[in-house]
Amino acid sequence: MFRLAVFFTLLIGTTVGASAQNIVHEASVKPTTEKPYIQSTSKDQPINVVIMGDSLANGLHQGLTRLNKENETVNFVKKSKVNTGFVRVDRYDWNKAAVKLAKTKDYQAAVVLIGLNDLQSFREKGKAYHYKTEGWVERYRERTERMMRDLKDAGLAVYWVSIPIVTPKHYQDDYRYLNTFYKEAAEKIGVRYVDTWAPLAGKNGEYSPFWKDAEGKQVEIRRRDGVHFTTNGYLIFAGIVNDIITSDLKAATKAQQ
Image 1 (tube, helix red, strand yellow):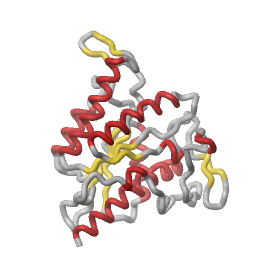
Image 2 (cartoon, one colour; image 1 turned 30 degrees about the vertical axis):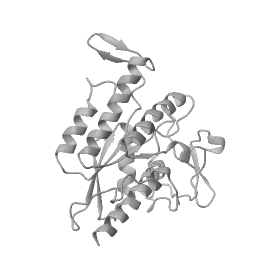
Image 3 (tube, helix red, strand yellow; image 1 turned 120 degrees about the vertical axis):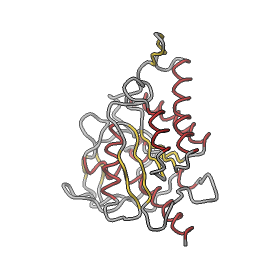
Image 4 (spheres, helix red, strand yellow; image 1 turned 60 degrees about the vertical axis):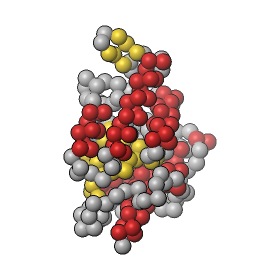
């Protein structure tokens, strides 16, 4: 586990203008194709990135939007929904939603962060498949892979974001477990897996609600629930994803020249 190599300059109550730089992420150094990962449809139009997932995805959209407020080459569109996931399709079916969004051809990339609400049983035709049982694992893996494949096959550049480290009091081991499904599926299907767990871990890989800013001051970046972030915390969280997307955008721009 490790800290990000370069820290944000955090000013409480103000917007941080840029994400961390010069960070080497596993996802950013393993392209799945010789072509640019993001395919732009026009030199004159911004690349549209759809944000999908749960409440953490909501905050991620907030952070990405703030980090790119002066960037006219990319547009982040929020389609995330709180209290949703893969398990409760009666509440919202993300597999169907992904196909529908992809068919619009409005987006060139998708950022997905899902899983907070999936520590529960699948219920199908009166039968329950309890968390971590064989039936549960089979269904969870299938839905994860299907969503990745549907988005990729529709031509979207997919960035699947891991659940970040959470407080041990709030299902830390369970969320680490869910991340294994996303990482394995991303490697299998060939999409970007963005690890946010390790970069946000504190000393010795432990959860910490604080972040050391450029001046060496401890800034609180996590909310009391130990899962979600403060406003400035979402900038740091989003910065991990933004660095990878920015690198891919530069490659796409260069390919058009």
